[in-house]
Picture 1 (cartoon, helix red, strand yellow):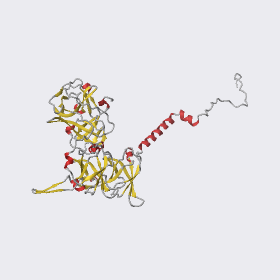
Picture 2: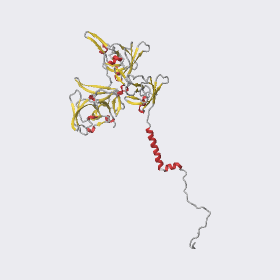
Picture 3: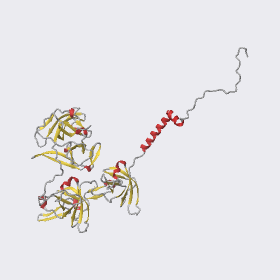
Picture 4: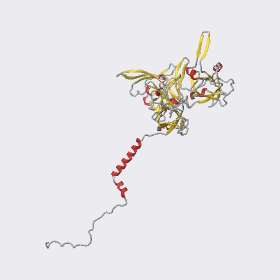
Length: 508
């Protein structure tokens, strides 16, 4: 050691001191979770995984039990259908506890949960051949399925049902009026037999049985809703079933209402004027009993009075014709078109309501001319300059064109209003046609049960007659007589395009 070096420190009995940070004991695992981003990422992944698993679980509706007298080859995996679409699936089939019936377990789809309510009726669809046609033919080589007629919307929930042995004659009808016809004999009538007014089907027979005192035969019938106004307390009913034979010098004459009346029987009715003019005539209520006559009396027809089917005034419509430029095989040429429409008196003046395809090419200047003509009137109006700025086209297929600058030549405008429907309604399609005595209105009646909503329009559940000449004609609600849409013919299939807020002038 050198003399210049400082002396070594003397050893000490105290241990050395080091700085120590105080631990945050108040956080623990929660603090670690809050201060670590990786834990937040992990928690987010867990939440997303739970949501995906929940969404991947198939949604199911309520499970119901239907007891059928026979199985008819039904098996698990077969479906339940309503109006042509699947609404449920058969999950299990077994014998009832008393071995006298078949218990079928059906799981409904969530959107078909409303079928599980009181009043719903179920049956197994199978091939059936009759003079009225062949039904259920698709089940002859394919799987059987269960048909359903839903109960009223205000009925309560029900999970166990008694299935029917066959499809009910009124499977899609809940409106109308049910009445009883009392007779001394059955007259060959069966459930499903037609009830006609001047040869047009206006109802059908629901059931045939004995009266409460077993002295008569009671025939329960239903008159469809659109023909309910034809029945009042003075109506007369008679039997049209069977085959009439008339021997004459010139030969034998055979008469029959139809093949259906020969096989299943049939009824007709008419409403003559009351014998006493002072007798009040009122609309019948459900359950009223009428006498069923065995033969028709000519005096009933001679005293028949006109009866309006609907308490609405059909609006006067107009016909539209013109030319539009369309490319055909790459060659541009003018093609003619015809349509129907209605001129309504609105706050904006005369407004033309028709199908949107009449004006959908307006902006591209493919529309050449449009001529408005009132049937039965020689005068017409040429729309050479169409005010495109006021044109309103709905997403459903309705067009509204204000014609405030057009002096409609002295003709009255339809007074019907425009309304936006929320669900399919009972309605009529109105169209004016020319005749020897001027214009007259014709209509085509459509019940609400014949519609199904698809892509914002109301398509028909059954094949309709050719309605090409009705394209663009207004659809009028039976309830209030207002215009709720127009009839469209697309690829040969009819549909109703309901009015929207933009057409009615009260919304987008």
